[in-house]
Image 1 (cartoon, helix red, strand yellow):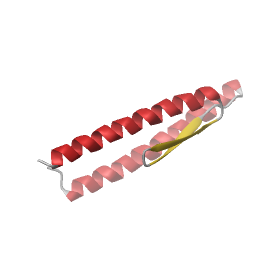
Image 2 (cartoon, one colour):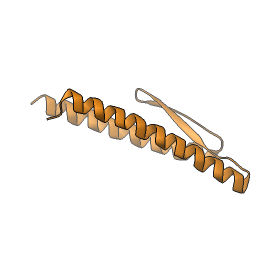
Image 3 (cartoon, one colour):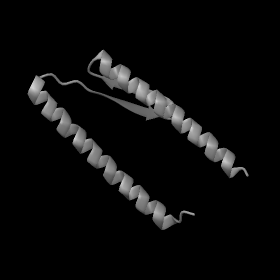
Image 4 (tube, one colour):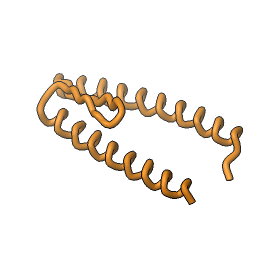
Length: 88
């Protein structure tokens, strides 16, 4: 079973991993813009079950939209499974 200290450590580690992923994405975006001169990108802000998607072109928006919908479905499935397991 997970105790509070382990969950706290896991949360801190996940925050640092997220920061590293964001920094790596900025470096890759910067390096690709030097080569081609064109920057493409997009992002999603998920508030509750509703994804708000933005991007610089249609392809980026489509990719981010599909990823955010997939993430929302996975999160709903995890919440339902955890709710059913907790009820026992």
